[in-house]
Length: 316
Image (cartoon, rainbow, N blue to C red):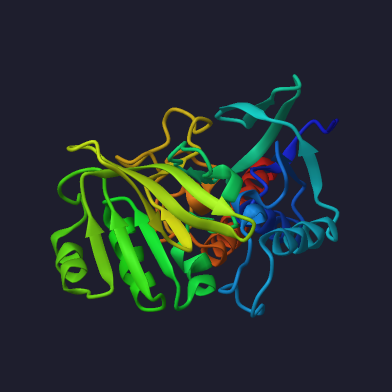
């Protein structure tokens, strides 16, 4: 447990954004601590393979996450394995309360709690994650080159990723529970014009089917007729939404309509000294490299903020 009276920065979340923030915070000579309740690396650590992080043609998600973690530790970054329960902004300092009872005080906070892909919650889904079930086409699509896959969902992300997968796979089934898509019209037009995408509407998956090699198909049910069937596929890409882990975001921080934190170009929120980076932030795309870059920006901005505060305190 930490015993320090005051930190320069408390980083909440140990994914790519949080760990990179830790590296840059220590390089900026900040007295920093990172709090993570789970395995370092966040969602990245449970990704089977990563092929789009610069410098690595192919690397396992856990291995890449461990490299992030070991790099941060090489700067003697203090880490606490605990759950954050509340973040309490203040005029003099900010407080972070942990489930274990400890309260951390700091000049600045970096929120890097990330988010979680929504699940179908059907049999075989979690058991086959990384074995044919994926929540990221740009991360895992390459593994299904010239194979048959299905995309489940009807929003912009599902349509965009179905189009992306159509470029590299043999055939894409696009499965949606309603009779029309929620995605933008321009994306729908592209979907309808893509010969490799076959649309299946008014249909829900009831289970993910697998064998020793991973996913072999999906069990489907028509919501209108009640008809059930099995669809042979090599992979199932699920895009039914992404939930930001926003429960810790304090009141007073501006949020988007979809629950993401809104920041300025320094990644500072509407509360001075509280920054946000990674998948919790309202940004263009959710990728490891983007989360890492935002962790860097947030740490550098936090360093400037802390330096300014300490300078003012000396003059007072």
